[in-house]
Image 1 (cartoon, rainbow, N blue to C red):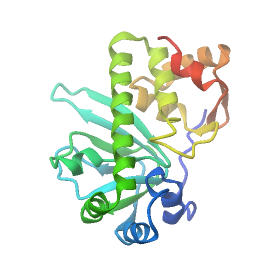
Image 2 (tube, rainbow, N blue to C red):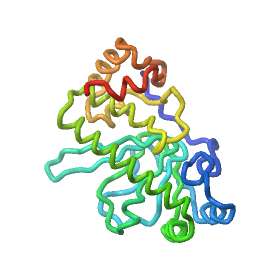
Image 3 (cartoon, helix red, strand yellow):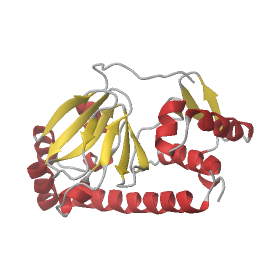
Length: 234
């Protein structure tokens, strides 16, 4: 697959991103207006930092349009990749709740537009909205399961399974709502997420395609058997 990094565009909008989000679905009109008022949009170029390890968080972050990678650099020089965050994903709630410096970097893998909900707005919603609290608890619980699965995959499974898990994670309906069957991603981007080379990703995709789990297309991947992809290798 070729590099499919897209340039910034006007669609989807910040309002579209809010409407897509699970956390916004059961808010009252007052709560929804407060949430919208407390947000700003930012644009991050490919390779730029959305947030950095060690900084104090000032906002809750959502991906309006683009793709990001959550990772940490170790003192040994190695990089641990935790997850890809596609359009529709929100992250950073744990750092805001503690509060503590971020324990990870989030890097834009392509030109990416983000929504930033200010810390004060985030905590106002926690204090005033039961629906928002439920959504945050659901998100934290789902992310915990995601990271346990990633740890298992890293320690127990082979490269093909890591690639399969890196793809299937981005179809989590709680963390990343609104994904359709086709994921717009390049082999290079997928390699960054799985922590392997583009050439090795190519081999894994061929194996997964031959097994009937997905179809490799120009500029992306179409999922044919998501449950099978999630169970692959394990």
